[in-house]
Length: 197
Image (cartoon, rainbow, N blue to C red; front, side, top):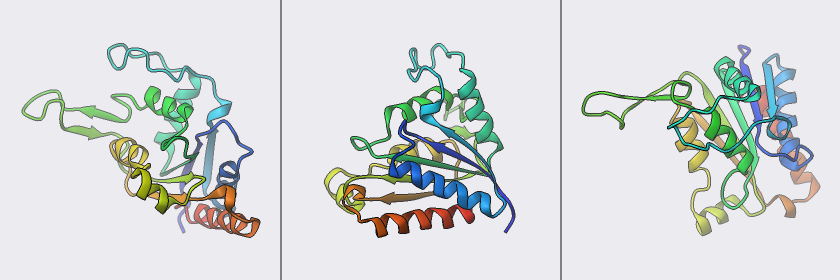
């Protein structure tokens, strides 16, 4: 298998969680087969997560956000890990995307003609992505009760910017799983990392 450049973004402040251990397992698997890996943990970086004026006034990016942009451009494959909180990603991860998925980096809207403001250029095309979401309810039950909690990350962020394919892995209920099941999930993450999935 050809070596890939993989960027792992851990989207929570708690690296010592089970979600963090999945990210560790994926990273170890990727490195074990010769893939190049860069990783950022959301809790380790310094930035203002609030997009104060929308796109009317572009805030200068902090060095850590510039680094994430650099890693995303460098990567063949981007992997995002986060726990499901209130049906979506943690606020710090949303803040990362709000701040650094900017016009000119992730997308560019058409400015003229009939499709002005509707059609857009996907500036991160040519890359694939995987998203791992941990939760404390079974994913199918969550979907029945609350709908698709992955639309935001999968379609409105990653696919919007051109990532394809975007693979999704939802696991739960984490708090009710016994250790052998948790260990099996970590082994699966390691294998997926080895395959750069």
